[in-house]
Image (cartoon, rainbow, N blue to C red; front, side, top):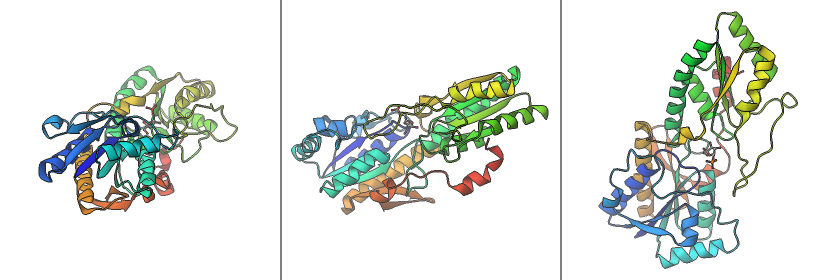
Length: 342
Ligand code: F6P
């Protein structure tokens, strides 16, 4: 068989580990030809493709980013793109396509499957916001990087008696903020799932300081929102899939806190640091298992499915189940960590 593979959406540590596993099993064991499309759906539309062999994919396990490059191209948005994409698949004699991506990339894979393209999905995103899988690879690495940053920020915040507002990615889900905040000992965690009250947060910091804590660390998810009418918010542009570009909440929150508390308040935006560099061992293993399972699904002729993690098992779920609804932090996880919500 000729199996196409692509990586779409934001990059994420572990993408190369999936590619490596697909090639090792698909080409090395099963004797398929693996075709790597460049820059997500863009490469399928434009016919930009390279054959991937075991030799060409050596040393990929620990490498961050994606050797295939990525884009947020939505072929359903540009007139004629679906026809070009179908033309490429026919010209390259692609029998099946393994799409590695989040909600957007897999949403396209699902629509294409409805039009007869044989697609298998592999879930990736540092945000961990895909439904139907317990975890996506990339999340563990992002949390680890953020937690290490928080450890470092504690010592400098303490030395200067400052409040540090640390912004993390995660889009409209608070997973990265919650996990890194818990692991990094944050004094307040603000997540999109629970609008925050800036007055209450300021009061809480003042209270901490009267009890002897000279500094505070506030972790804020980029998608966190203030309670209506309590703080100014900002409009932002949207991408090809209609997603608003987030970022900047820490910069807006810090002066509000400083004004209310009188404590010197500084901002740290971790941003793309959380997506860069080498994956953790956990993410390498999860990504590898997903890649191996994706090849099995292709060989079984099981399409329009996504490989997923349930407990410790890799299972297959309909792609539709993964992309229908965002997996946000459930109320019981928020209740569990209530003591840290500002
Ligand atoms: O989905 C991954 C993610 O890193 C989000 O956490 C963030 O909102 C977004 O991508 C940023 O995307 P870009 O790198 O295109 O600005």
